[in-house]
Length: 498
Image 1 (cartoon, helix red, strand yellow):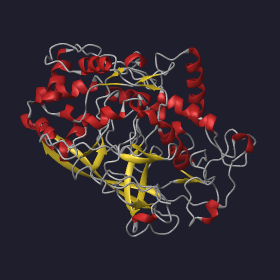
Image 2: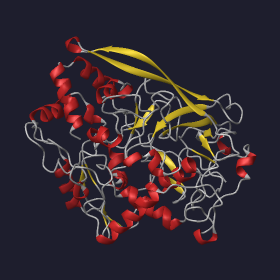
Image 3: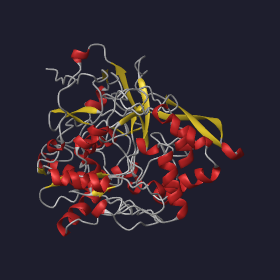
Image 4: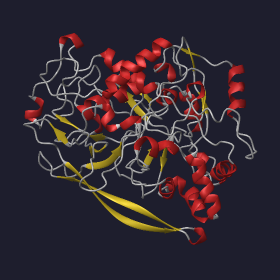
């Protein structure tokens, strides 16, 4: 039976994720409004601004380990769970059958052999830089338009009716076990675009074109829609999950009622765990409602590992790939009949939830302060909302009641034709993306060894990332192009301090 949710039905609140939420009192609401209100002055750091992740914030490191620290407020027992989850996040999976049930179940088709292979040092992935570079931290999503909405399981009214490619499923895997052909080889070509800037300066943007080359199982569906995705950084996810849904929904303005040109929309997706529509939060188009479901889908789609949410032992193989679906899997009775059981899934989820956000650097530097003012004057903060306060939670949940500075509204925005992938997902159309958090971006090179940004890593610098903005962000982008070079330099310096 198809599950639907009509427009106007109240969206779920965070209680659907954290069942032990303590409702806010009116006094708390007033206090939160006071601490999240932004001062008019830009000549000094704001109170608590340096602690981007609230009490979870850790000292910033200028090494590859900057994103791999446990949240500062974990208990001793929680830090043990973090370390075990980290071990499972790094685990190299092998093909079944194997001498140990703990690590077998890989494939038959996959994008990586571990979570860490895509999220290297818990940082960002990158597109392949030439034929000798790896594409392991990037893949292509795929879907086709659905013919009959009523045939789509868990369809939510108002979303785009799409279906998996009948042969290749929902994402393309470029690795395979012996005896199985990989689904494709990622091919990327680039075209340079010159952008004149004020002060006689020029920037060069790199426009990518993606191709699914060397298809292993015949042609894609004629209407197949492809979308490139690089692995995002992992820090602060539990804090983003703990932002109250009502606070995110309060920022939405789908019809641009205030006339400012910004019309953020909430993503709504189906939760397999809660069996109902929920606010989407995770992924480049906010396609997953919880970190648990994001983790489970990554295990199944990226590594081919069955789990209590995605139960197929063959991972993402489709019915058209008969050798793949008939192959051995690593399911074991001691793990509930899965390749990773609920305990293991929960540990990896907890690890992902509690990776610490590094402290801001140089918050009192005059150029950083100037750049922050430029950021607001240009309108960047209309989508990259600076701060939130998370829900108050029962027990010792480390995400409880924290003032955080992620610089995101968690909403979908039209980013214009330049960044469009022309592939809808949930309520996001082919031009919409969730506002990416900015915390930690200044440490990307230290962690990941590159400065590639945006959903497909096309931007090779923060300035290029800004210049790719269009749609609702066109006015802000144009302001950056026109501003004096010293203001533009200050803006980038502010972003680098994140």
